[in-house]
Image (cartoon, rainbow, N blue to C red; front, side):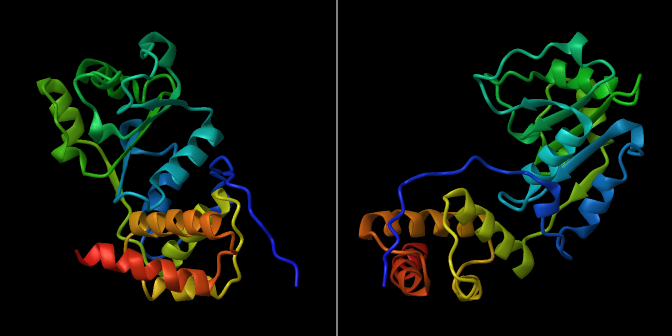
Length: 231
């Protein structure tokens, strides 16, 4: 029997819309997103916990609409060129995690929201929390955020968690036997972030032990993983 040794490589993330797993936990949000360009005032906030597919859906939308993408929480992102955004589709990632040092100021976000619905302009924002909970020092921005339409992705179900695991492992160039996924689902917390963390642990263990990723390796690794969760 030949043994396959993996190199510690990763593939760039892929955001093909057809690869997104639609399930009862996200179907309503997907329908709201697909209603574009008929969003109220050209604006929509896509909200949900970490790892449930907000970025996947948003990047697929950005590709389809040739949107300009702004990383709101990245202090090293380039300055926002407001005049260049007029009449454009705009994606603002992590809109709820803006900070004092971030590129996207309250004033800039206010002007971008105002440009939505004018001359074909439209804005999609992603966040972990609803716009009502976002910080806003500018009163006019507060009113715009309060009025945003929101599409909510709920905590992941089995279909979504399986897709998260498949995507996380594929990004690490791992293609395990299909029986690994139901095994993992019975042992992991109901969290996309925890599923991604488990994929990291499996990847590290496979590289360290020079073994394939399978149920036997998962049984060893998840013992440590579950132990850490209980501390």
